[in-house]
Each structure stands twice: as C-alpha cells, then as structure tokens.
Image 1 (tube, helix red, strand yellow):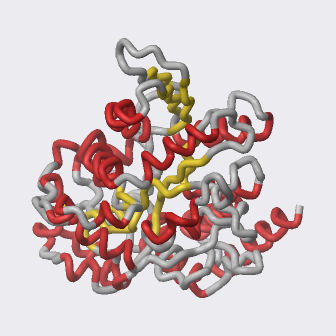
Image 2: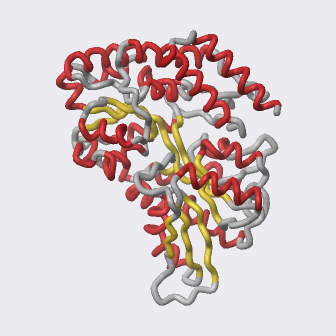
Image 3: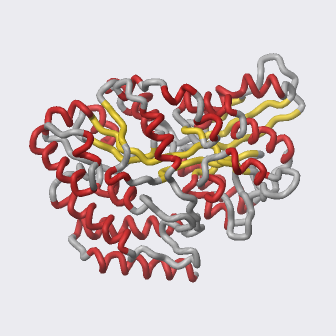
Length: 415
C-alpha cells in the first residue's frame, strides 16, 4: 500500500500499551501512515493474546520512513523490532542483506504462501529464495472516476474503459463539455501502463537477467499515450500528492485517477470526503490488470526480539480478523485469501455511490501475475520519469529519451 500523509513528516511516537499493564516486553514497530492506525486498532486483540507485550509505534511519512530504515539497517542503530516496507522499496532492502530470511526456521514463512494472493510472496522473495517480508496488503490497480462529470459530458464507463485510445477520446469529450481534465498528470497513464499485463516472472524495469528493458514496446506505448494526453490538453500538469492535486479532486477539476484501490480510503477520509457518492471505480482501460502498491512486514537481521516480532507479524498478516479490520479502518486491501471471501466484500461502498467496488478489486487482484522486484527499481523509475518529462515538457523524441534512460540505468547498475 502506498500510504501518504497529509500532515507533518515529523516522527509521531505512539505508546500503545494497555492501561494498567505492567509489561515486561515492548516491541518497537516502524511504520508510515496509515499503518500506525492499523496497529492501534489491532492492539486490543493483540493484548488479549499477549497481555505482557506492549507495542510502541514510530511513524514517519513514507519517504522519510524508508530513508530512516535504510540508515538504521546500514548502521545497525535505532533498529526497530518490526518494520513496514512498501513494495517499491522491498527489492532494494532485500539486496542490502539487512532483513531476516523468513523462509528459514523458526519462521518457515513458506508454509503460509498458499494462504495469500498469488503474486505477493514473489515480490518479497530474492533470487536465492530468501523471503524478506510477510505480505500485509496489496494494491490492485483501478480507475476512479467522477460519475457526475462523466454524466455532464455524455460519457459512460464503457467509453472510458473500452481501450486506452477510448480513454483519451473520452477525456476530449469531458474537457470540452465540462472543462475538467481527464487526469492530474500525464505520468499517471505511463505509470499504470508499464505495470499492466506483465507476464509471470517479468520485472517492471528489468528482465530476468537483470538487464534494463525500458526501450521495449511497453515503455514506448506508455510514453506515446502520455505524450498524446499532453498534446490533447487532457492532463492538469499537477504533481501527485501535492496540495493542488488534492484540491483538484475536491473541486472536480480532474475527472479520473488511476492508482491502487487503496486510494479510495484517502479520497473518503481526507482528500475529498465531501465528494461522497460522486465517485465510482472501474477496471483499468483495455481490461488491463496491474499491481500498484502493497506493504510487507519485515524483521531486521540484528533485531533483538525476533520470536515475539514474528508472532506480531503473524498476528497482522495470517489472521482473517486482523486483515479485515485493517481493510475496514484504512482501506488496506487484504493479501490474505480467506479475508477476501468475507461478506464485507459484497457490501456497497457509500463513498463510491453504493457500488460494490471491492468485488471489482478482488477480481483484478486475481489476474495480477507474480513479478520480480529489483534493488534498482527506484533508480529505473527515476530515470524513466525524467525521460518522460523531457518528452511531454520539452518535446523530446520518445525513442531517444527512452534510450538515454536505458543507458543511464545500465550505467548505475554497473557501478
């Protein structure tokens, strides 16, 4: 799950001890919002099972959290007992060797693999078979759209999702009829397209041998779609997660947003709660399926309370009740299959006009393949985004920009 925080990025230290308890053990857990809320909600049940074990949560904004964990792992100082790792960072953290291999005894995490959605364990498994994290939540890609804006433009959901070209064509109609932009940033369509419909074992940016593949037809098409969106004036040129981005959803100046299903929780809780009932969710255009976000729980190699840390991780990940409570509280889509069969999934979502959106997301998750992660994924992502900026902002040639990005990535990998 790619959680973001609308407040300060300063650390928030929450003591989650039960009132009146005289604990002889305290687990230190490092997270990013809204995972701190998930643990706070789960603590009463945890305390029933482990009354003498308190949990102290240190929460930082997502980028600051991962920077802090990088430093902690490198220096073996200020290490938590348990840390949350967003899927975009799992490859880099795994390669660093600072995370416990949960495939080995006494953890034997592989025994739980069949209990989770297919692709999650692969994301946290290294080439030598080490499992460096237990899957907490997932981010099946989805298309959120403002139904009221589409209605004014005479655009249907089918128009929006039939194909990538029809998605852009719908954007032209929406812009002409309402003045609203189709998307916040042309990067949105690129980011989703390069993750869509990958084959089992593929990587987003690298092949199985670790070679960059950003000059492939998949990236060329993604860049061409983003370029066309800019040329047609369909993107608002807004940076994701900025104040302007949030305001565009509140005011209805942006009609759609492709992202992980978890965005629905952010829209309803703090980004645009007053737009309740106006939004809907749909599959991605062209019946594409993509993973966008997800979270893992890991134990540092040099942590000092590993047995209890493992018990806490199992409590968060392998219990249906805990996973469902997290989904209800912070829209963390459960990775545990038994949680996905709960009747809660068939309940209407009020924020989305009473649509049964969770069933859409569950179906999407079932189509997502297991792909490999690389420790250089972030390096590649930065290079690709820089190349896209050159194309949409400066008019650079798509093939030339991607070749430059490929060369840059290859150089960084060789260093």
